[in-house]
Image: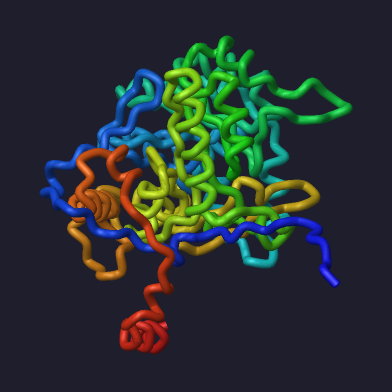
Length: 383
């Protein structure tokens, strides 16, 4: 008896399950072009720092701008709720593990102060840096005009999962086409993981999409509600939407892979999967200049009834410049991410990020199972 199928399942792939194939030509890494453009703004490295309170404060945003990247300041976070955010961050860092979730719920219940939004943005702008800010959909209508007036350059609207259509009986949902007209600045929206949702978002007139549900180091969405798609597959789906939308309109919408990147190899695979840039959270939290002092927690951790995040101790590894550009003091790919990207592009024969999109990828055994026995044994012993 033939049993009818209830639904089809697609095999999805994460970073550990694929490898890049070398190109037919090679290029000197220093001749590669890794510029990233969003709207009319161009950055010399395709790296964004995640809009998390443990990762970005005004000083960190200024520093990353000087290094060529873009940091996103969380306007729904501690920086806009408290006059002295450093004191609040210290409370979170020092809290016992069994008390931290309830403490975060209490801390994030403090109202956002509109005055602080302007002050934080002005601190970044007065230093000559490009200022990107993040809001959740629920606060965007109220706070986006304030951010615009204060001089913000890029608006990121971000939640665990964002779609162009939201059904609610209690309020009229955020209409991204109206938002783009209102703020008159590049708008990045996230997060999404499918072709259809990405394409619908692009059709609202936005300039970039964030890709990733569930893969972040501090995110527990997969564990708590079972939702998520591995990043290689998710990035490829959203990149396909970008290509379809470009054919429709001639407008190129940036695809930004957000979450799950731990090493240089992960970062390189994100670009080969179709990313125009990457957003880094836990890696940035390991920078000596990060406000979390080696700790890191997810944006959904403070949810009053269903927290989906955990405080992790990422540790402080090195100054931000060393993490991005080296020289590296390790052999595990956790420093000199820009060097790794340029080297991979050179080996794959990619002059530009768009060339890197064409790099052939293969499904491959996890690297720890393929000829790396002694590395694995040493790793277990040292752990």
